[in-house]
Amino acid sequence: MQQSRQNWRNWSATDKLALLQTLKARNRLSWKPLPGPQTQAYECRADIILYGGAAGGGKTDLGLGKALTQHQRTLMLRREMPQLKGIIDRSKLLYSEYGVYNETHKVWRTEFGGKRRMIEFGSVQYEQDKQAYQGRPHDLKIFDEAANFLESQVEFIIGWNRSEDPSQRCQVLLLSNPPTDSTGDWLIVWFAPWLDPLHPNPAAPGELRHFASVEGRQIECATGDPFVLVDGQQVYDFNPADYDPIDIIRPLTRTFIPARVTDNPYYSESGYIAKLQALPEPLRSKMLYGDFAAGREDDPWQVIPSEWVRAAQDRWRHRTRPPIPMTALGVDVARGGNDKTIHSPRYANWFDEQICFPGTATPDGFVVAQQIFNLRQSGTVVNIDVVGVGASPYDIVRAAIGDRIWGVSGAAGTDELDRSEQFGFINLRALLWWRMREALDPVFGEDLALPPDPGLAADLCAPRYKKVARGIQVESKEEIKKRIGRSPDKGDSAVYALAEHRSSLAFGSI
Image (cartoon, rainbow, N blue to C red; front, side, top):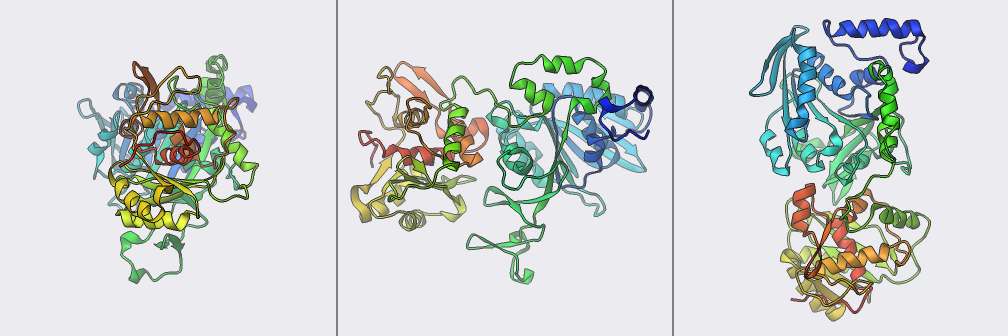
């Protein structure tokens, strides 16, 4: 067919009929990708591929097809176990003549192209479920509906994307529609050149870019050349013999290949498009067009509405830093693990870009205190979380600057009321987060300008609240971390930076 690479809707009736007849017989033959984006993704050589966007683009079939024809050991995951049923049913149609399926272990053992294949299905409903896949190598890791997974789950599991066969290409395949809540916002960070409309150097669909994970951050690299970190800086001109191999960072390639229902002749002729068109906005734009930028629906108990944060970040892009001394520095100290120490400089209602240090770079209070001294200007108020490890740097800095530092203890009580003077707060943490909400209010707020960092936006939109007899209660950091798989360090730091703006706050002290 001369038109096989064109959009389905542009094909002639003869070509459509011929392809559909071929597709009907395909289940009895070896699997082949559909012409267009599915073939592009099937042949793509990127280390990490995001495929999909819109509903009906043949995402699951792509994963099953690659597993059968290109890879030796595959792990295909959904967030919850019941969601696997449709995938397993489809696999039985595709794989039955090539091998045997073990219902108990949810594993296919097949033979295709002269090689034995193993395809395993699983789920990671809770954050800790990822531990079940520790140390288990697969040369293809597939996350079906990737936007439903926590970033921490994906990062952990792909750590064992490897093979003992040097000729076997190892890949990660993320199959997904646009996220409908904050759980999947990490996809927009990982694939910003393709998905962020404000990215300064946008990438074309299928274009390969190089990325590396550096100190807990996803960074884009100009090339795939290895580098080392020296005093936090990337150094490419180095002698490998002088470094432990585990300290040499090698970027991996990523790409995004969009697909729509119009690329799938099965659904194009079934009336499925009409069903997608009937969905309410913004779900319609997400599922019909694969629009990652379309607004998502906030949780009804989200402390800060997403749109308010986006508006504040948009204001930042159109302003410059006020010509005044630094007003306040908010500091959230790492509590171990993957947590980060975050410093948030504030100049009146303009927040500067946050300075982030991994927990390993802030091993004790002296190091954190030195960071504060390096960043703070004369007269700047420092607001620091003193719970746990924050107590030590608080003591050190207070000895030098006296009452220009406040130790914020989230569990401390407060008699403050909300702006309407109708609600109290169960503790200081709830009050501070609510003050940030009030300051971001587009009508009655303080016209804040926040740096356009997707990580900061995700953290500010993460906490939820509830109303109890004693007032408003906001989720603790530990509760949020358990729910979304990460600590909202950037959000907490920004909240602390704002806190000094209201001198009447009853700060906790030690």
